[in-house]
Image (cartoon, rainbow, N blue to C red; front, side, top):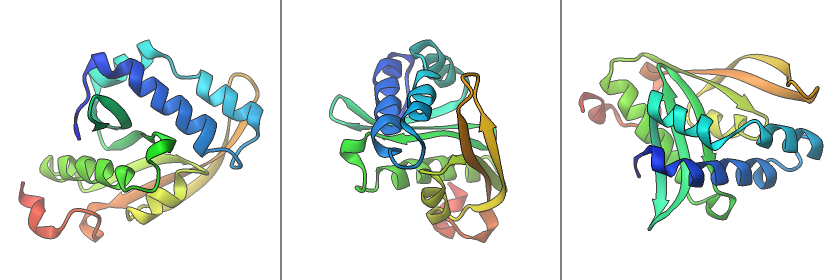
Length: 163
């Protein structure tokens, strides 16, 4: 795990597109997945890396996961499908939670896809509302607004809060 750099943007884009096109199959129709994946660009990822607190999970030189924190929002959390089920998302989220606690944040938020919602629930988030997003191509996505009050547990032990 390390801080993301703008030079990671191409690999991060690949991770995101693969995660959407492979890991989210069955959660949304194929046309919706294609639309969602096409919303991401290398320049947009680079801008996100430059303007938010962003981290990558790596296996040697290969980027296998990406997460970023925009103020108090866990904006993007994606893991390459080849690395799913290995705790990569949990380790990345723990990094974000540690950063949030160091900054004195009391709450984190996220907008979760149907695929991501169970992952965020495991991290201590709760659904605060549900809504349907219609993208610019007319595709609809069931999403959950989620929040995690950091004073109510989480992945980072209490002793680590003073870091």
